[in-house]
Image 1 (spheres, rainbow, N blue to C red):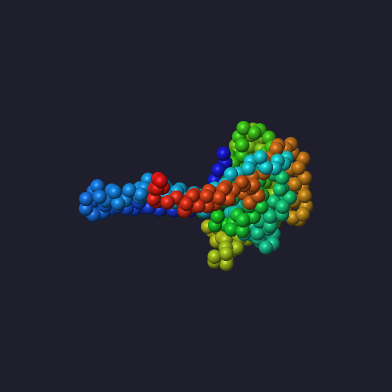
Image 2: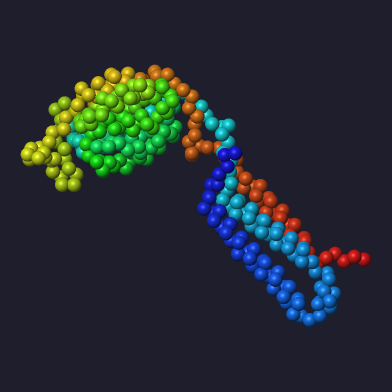
Length: 335
């Protein structure tokens, strides 16, 4: 049925009906008790013969039902019209971004990470017919956003991404590839891609087996190299000093272009060096557009079409209250 409530928290007010019912039962018992305490029962029955306790109960039931419906109206019951889903041809794509400390190197201005984030923003603007997911990784990989056709949602996650997004340091490319693979449909042996954005300083021995797993599952990996062959020191934003090794020497982080080319080659993808954003975007988008597509149903939360029951609830409430007004508590006198 695809039914849902827009304001589901309002349903808690249904609990107010419980004390109202309890109060109603108390009033009925109180009336009976008072009636008995007034004197002769037959005389009281004769004096109140035109009063109808049944009609009094009906009036309460109508008000209680109107209140019940009113709560559902406030919660805004709605039905999602799945027949209005738009379909487009596209593929499933996981963007995997390196957030290790080496991405703070400034051989690409302002930093490798900032430049990579800018690139992802531009990529998403050109991948709107596809479904996108987002993985960040350093010494381990974390799925930040599962696959969605709302590609603009990735920009919300990008704004908060930094080198503290993953607590374990390192550059576990193998783990990133496997996390991306696990986020894709295992039954589908095509229509899948990973865009891996990193400086390639891999410290993960599982990369080779991960590449084979993705290839066997039909996942094409496009690698984007962020950095230069000469490299640069890593500036620690906390101490504002360059990172040093155990011997006190300044650590120079260099782009590992060889490994990134190998990953792309073994999975049928392509390696691109991040030196010009427009060129990189054009290359990746062109390659993805040339891949075999599948039909993707649009399910963006912001664009869903709903059928709302609110007007019908309001009409029912008004009808019940009008009926309640015209129901007397006295019986009709018989001539």
